[in-house]
Image 1 (spheres, chains in turn green, purple):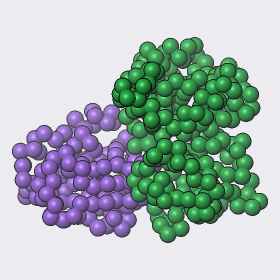
Image 2 (cartoon, chains in turn blue, purple):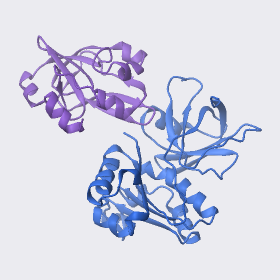
Image 3 (tube, rainbow over the protein chains, first blue to last red):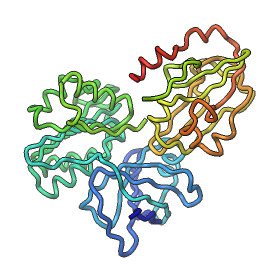
Image 4 (tube, rainbow over the protein chains, first blue to last red):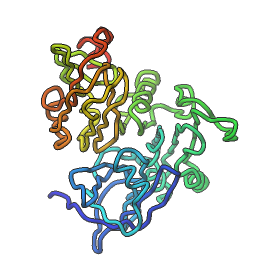
Length: 238
Length: 127
């Protein structure tokens, strides 16, 4: 049966960074859909029904009563959402689909490579694992330009304290002295990836972000680390 | 596998060019439209605008992302394709046919030599 497209109201609109906003779409009364953490929804405004954009859920399947997406100011939709969307606005939402799904098996290690707003689905991954108190290891390797570009920094740091199986690792590609960043700098490298991944046989690799980052991640994981293609899942954002 | 017609020239940034009588027709490649997925919006340059090779001059948005489109060659925009503005899905359906973006009167025809052959473009996209 085809899933129903529903009009949903924006319940909250939180500016995470100057160019990034999280919208929470409130489910209509009685709506209780089945979906999975890591899937994406497609949204459109009532006045432009042919102009649709897909966004990964930044909430998880245990979050009931709403969907959350975290949107960067990019293109017409991203600009409209970041600059103008507010509580009470209504958009149409095509229900979640997608196969970018966490493999929550006790011995697995989910190695999640993200660039920019590509980190948003991993918030859902870690949220669900933490709430369920799963033993599955999760490591997020997050590449941003500067420390000011880290989305969900505080939430990931808090989840790290709550979940001993979760590590949040950030590298800044364009950190300047004024940022006072004492962490890692430069791109995600194969040596860093190898060191954090540990036992390759238990790893499931994920990469989400701009095409160039995802292709770089695929090359490192498949060609340089020698992982099987089946061990990797990707979401390219152009 | 993406279609790479043998009668076209290609830019590294995934535009194609078909040249006839000093006029270049420009669009985006089959590989590009597949990477973008469903295209929902196209913005084209104004006719009469002068562009340089490598200059961003159009925008496409798919359900996943927004991308600049670069002019592969220098010249003057002679005509744009209103059909892709009205029906952006045409770029997915006919990327190297009815989904063309604009026609360019070349000011530096020698730049053509710097574009990729179909074989070289196929190597670039791994197809």
